[in-house]
Length: 224
Ligand code: FES
Picture 1 (tube, rainbow, N blue to C red):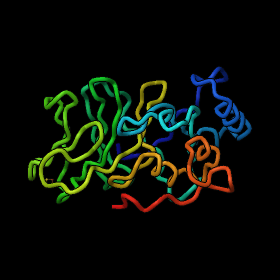
Picture 2 (picture 1 turned 45 degrees about the horizontal axis):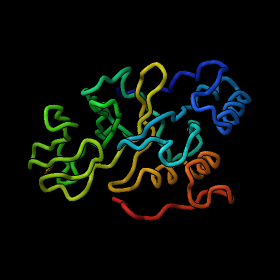
Picture 3 (picture 1 turned 180 degrees about the horizontal axis):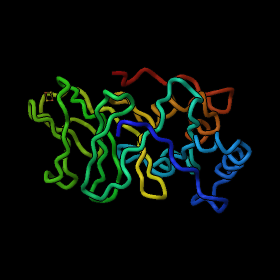
Picture 4 (picture 1 turned 45 degrees about the vertical axis):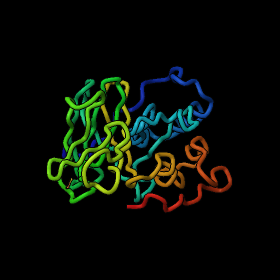
């Protein structure tokens, strides 16, 4: 999809799936905003690329990305209306030239990666027929990446594939939200991109410095 879209507004009032108090406070904050602004929010509800559940890093509530909060953040982008197990979809994110792949693994996990091989930048493809999870394959020099982690499993690529953080909305649509650098832990990537502009989210993630006047910059580990 070449046009960045904003997701539909959240459903009306009702209990959040996680029932967390922080989520309620965030919802209240949204309700206090104008309807126009409200449409610009996107809630990260469940999973990010690489199989990391947001709850897996201690975040029970959602994280909100408000369009325009930070110039450093790409706008959320709709990847597809639906993605069934075993299927993949190619898209561009965060820029129009940045090739990326979203894959639904056979167990339902949703993963997203840069589709630019870390060897010599050929296009990485999804091969469902290889192994239990399928694999990400670069035909140029037989490079292979683990579909669940993005790690190199064969061939000459020197580094893992950078991840694209995805979320699935209640209507089944899949959205790209942010990216990681090659080898950067998901929590660090989220803190780096959401920490300063979303202090409440940074606190939920356990970002360094969160709750003490803002999240500190993450380490430089994994920078591409
Ligand atoms: Fe991908 Fe060489 S460019 S393996």
